Amino acid sequence: MSRKLFFLATIALTAVSGLSNAPALAQGHMGSPQEQQACSRDASRFCRKDLGNDMAVQGCLQANRAKLSRSCSKVFQSHGM
Image 1 (cartoon, helix red, strand yellow):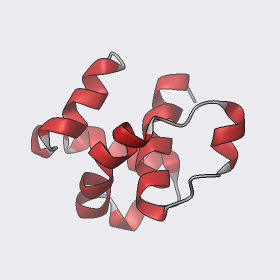
Image 2 (cartoon, rainbow, N blue to C red):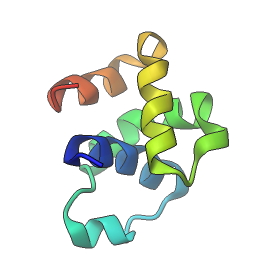
Image 3 (cartoon, helix red, strand yellow):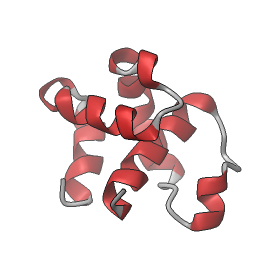
Image 4 (cartoon, helix red, strand yellow):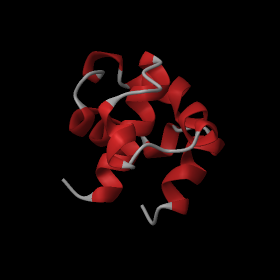
């Protein structure tokens, strides 16, 4: 999985599940608390069935890109996606 995909999926998963000390933190891929917060509502709203599967959440958020909140959309844009 590319770093960008992993990063965005981690943002969504950690924000929704509250796993601030998830293994991704040790790998240095977790987004800032602000980035996590920006996408947590969208992940819960559009991707609830995929939570726990980072690739699926990332794909789900991208599939719903037109519906994402402005703040989550900016997170995607800031990472070149």
